[in-house]
Amino acid sequence: MLFRKFCINYYDTKKTQVKSMEIQVNMPYFGYLLNYLHGNFTCFELVEFQNISGKYAKTLYRLLKQWKSIGVPPKMEWRKFRELMGISENVKLLEVIERDMLKPATQELQKLPHFENLCYEKIKTKGMGNRITHIQFYFEPITKTSKDREQAKSDIRTIAWGD
Picture 1 (cartoon, rainbow, N blue to C red):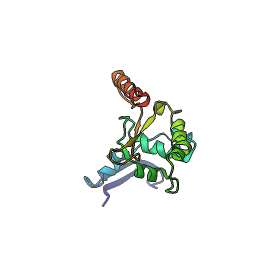
Picture 2 (cartoon, one colour):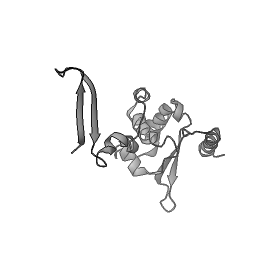
Picture 3 (cartoon, rainbow, N blue to C red):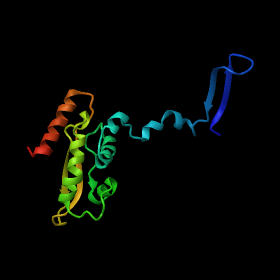
Picture 4 (cartoon, rainbow, N blue to C red):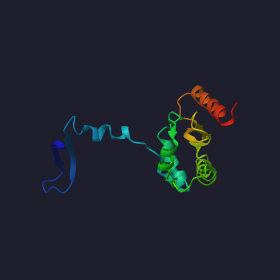
């Protein structure tokens, strides 16, 4: 049972105008729905999302936004990344993926204040030849202190420019 108590108080005897409602949720089973539902979801700005053009940029936005407070999402296996981005298995060449999908998507996201320093690194695993096995994204996290922001900017410069 979702509610343990549900009481409606009216202003009038005809019950046409509601004065107040008292609702008690059956705890602990359904308290989660009201109190903690936001904890397991990524929240992003609808207006910000609507202003993004391109399906790859929108998908990349959804993948990266959940790491907004960290700035470094976990490295992702290349095959899984392609699947999440909706890149067809028919597209074999890395140059085509980068030129037509990855670079335009990152450039689009760089227009947003939170992702203006967005960059990525293609990772090759030893013993796998010249094959890309993972991809790692970096961006400036939303941090509370200026010291954290400066450290993040330094980390991004190091990754993006190889300093």
